[in-house]
Image 1 (cartoon, rainbow, N blue to C red):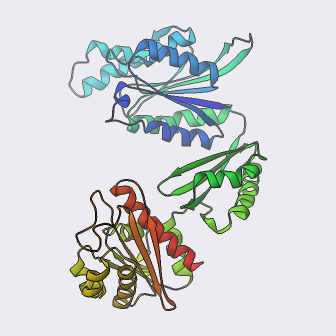
Image 2 (image 1 turned 45 degrees about the vertical axis):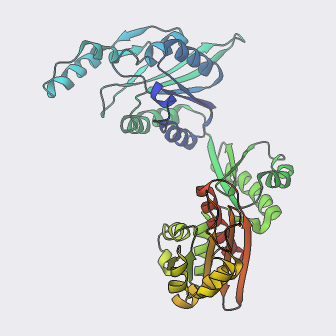
Image 3 (image 1 turned 60 degrees about the vertical axis):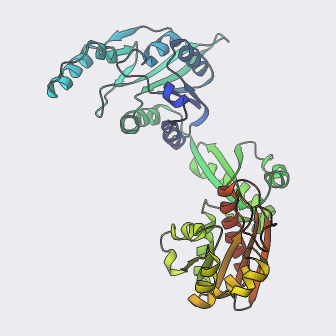
Length: 423
C-alpha cells in the first residue's frame, strides 16, 4: 500500500515555516510497511485543497492530512475532504459539549466559530485530541474508481501542531492501521561514501541495484558525500532484510573502501572508531576552518578518548606560538602552502604528544589571500597535512563554492584523509 501526506497551511509556503510533520508521519507509516509515495503542501485555499484531496484519494491507498482543523475561516481541511469524498459533514454534539467544557474550565466564553471543529465526515471515527481543541478523524471507506472497481481508501485528518499530531497519530492511528493493513515490513540500509562524484557511484552501482526490482534504491548527494539508501517491503522483516543485505553486500564489494559506513555512521564517527581500534590519538591545527574539524569530532560522545584537541591557528603569530611553525617559513611560503601545512601538522602532534597530527590551511574567501606570498593564490586553495611517527603527507585541494562550503569540504577531506590513512 502507498500513502500520500498533505500538509495544509499557507505559512508553509513561505520561507519562515517548514513542514516537519510529514517526516514524523513517514517514519510511522514506514514502521507499518507503508511507503509514502507523495507529499504535498497546500495553502489555505478551498479549491486548491479540494483538488489536491481528489488527486491524493485517487492515487494513494492512505491519505493523511495534517493541519487545517482549527476554528478559523482559513481552516478548510474538513470541508475539502468532504467534497473530495462526496460526503456530508455532521456536527457531533459530544464534541460541542467537550469544547464548551474546555473553555469553561478556563473561564473563557467559547467563540461561536469553534463549533466547526465538531464537524465530522460521515462514517469517520472521531479521534480524541487530549492536547488541543481540534479532534482528528479516521475514515476507512470504499470508493468506486474510474475503472468501475471498488477501492479501499483510508483518510486521516490530524491537527497541525506537532505536540497534538504526534501523540494522536501514535496512540490512535497506528494501532488502527496495524490491525487492518496486510502484514508488511520495511527493511532499510544506507551506505555512505565521501568525496566521490554521484555519477561515478551510479555508473558503478546501477548495473547491480537494477537487478533488484523489489528494492527501492535512492542516491543522495550533498555535504561532500554520497548516500545510497535501500528500502524493501516484504510480508516478513526477515525476507525484507535478506534482500536489502544481499544487495548492499554486492554494492560494498564493488565500491570497496570508498564506502566509509554501511549502517549510517558519520565520517567523524568512523574516524574515531578506527582511532580507537588502533589505540591512537589525534590532534588538530586549523586555520581556515576555524575549529570546524574539532567541532565535528567533539560532537561524538566519547571522542575525548581519541581526540586530544588542538588549536585554531588563524593568525600567523599563533601558528608559531601554538604549533611551532617558524615565522620565516610563513614569511617565505605564505600561511597557505604545503610547507606551512606540514609544519603545523608536525608541530601540533609534537605539542600535544598525539599519535597523529592533522592540519588545515587555506583560502576560504570571499576575498583573496593576505598580502605577500598568498596574495595571488586562488580562493578555494586548501592544504591538508597528516603527520604520524612514519612521516608527514600533504595534499592540495582546489575547492569551489562559498566560504561555508569550502570550510566544510576542507574538513571532509581531512577526515577522509585520516580514515584512508588508518585503513
